[in-house]
Length: 122
Image 1 (cartoon, rainbow, N blue to C red):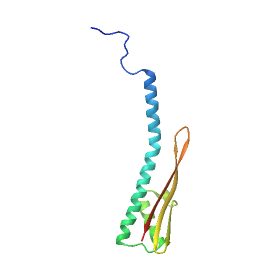
Image 2 (tube, rainbow, N blue to C red):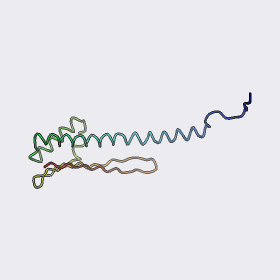
Image 3 (cartoon, rainbow, N blue to C red):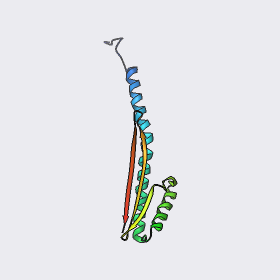
Image 4 (spheres, rainbow, N blue to C red):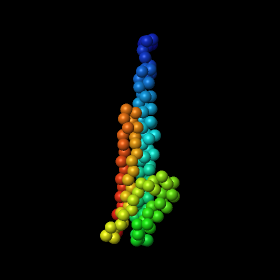
C-alpha cells in the first residue's frame, strides 16, 4: 500500500465555513425574493383574469373594474394590495395599473424593488 498518513481527505474547515456562509446568504436573499416573485406573478394572474372576463362581460365603469380587481385580490388573499392599484377610464379605454415598492435587504445595502404593471381594456 502506498498511502500517505498526512494526506488530506475531505474539505478543509475554512472551505466548509465559506461554503456555508455563501449558501446562507443565498438562502437569506431567496427567502426575501421568492415571495416578491410570487406576489408579482399573482398580480399578473389577476390582470389576466380581468382581461379574460372583460371579453365575455365588458367593463363599463371605473368602479366596476375596481370591484373586479378587489374581488380577485380577496380571492388570492392579497387584501394589502387594494391601495396599490388605480383604475382610470379615458376615451372608452379602462386602464388598471398596479404600482408598489418592495425592498430587498442584501445585508450590505437595501435594494429597492419597484413593480409596475398595467392592463388596458378596450
